[in-house]
Length: 260
Image 1 (cartoon, one colour):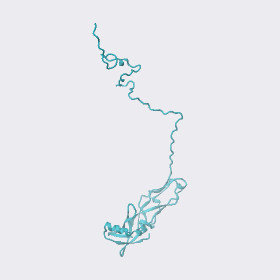
Image 2 (tube, helix red, strand yellow):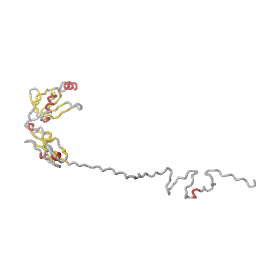
Image 3 (cartoon, helix red, strand yellow):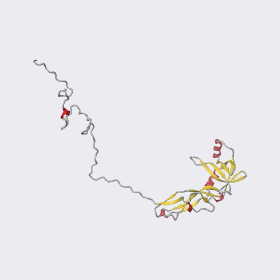
Image 4 (cartoon, helix red, strand yellow):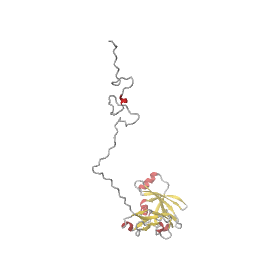
């Protein structure tokens, strides 16, 4: 991968006000660290960093970071963005040795059209979108292409089948599925049962308030003045002992003395 030159200026630790002024002027803060050297705080042109991120190498682009009169090979390690505008806010650079292998992540790009999708009506599921690799900084691929033009229904491509550049080692399970074509299962809804013409819906039985089921213990006494039910117990309707017949609660009639 061709390296890119990026100029940076060393800066002292700045206050929040100074950093805001820096960003308004089109520059962003950054830091370079690694390779057994002390971290260096920097200021970089925002547009230059954006150009690198949109280059074929993207975040894996090999950069020659020029600080003063010295040049250092670096990779972009981390990017911070504004939570709302998504503008670049801060960039971390990692110093590297061009003679030592490093580990990084490489995106996977799907190429072609699967017959299992176009003809068979299946669905392509892309499970792994980037893989971790180990190689020299000068051999980092911009991306890894996966050709799916031969995939039929229920077929897939595993990690061990990826076509990697020479001297690039993949760091994941060889049996991991990268993409595959799935069969679509259509579930038909069961229609609701149609109502029978002329059928009357069964209404729930309503028990009137105060009605006592036959044979129930603790039945409530009938209201005063109510007629006894036909066929009911006659003893239940008789007056209590010592109580004259008549209206309940009526006073007994006084007897006149004999001979008067």
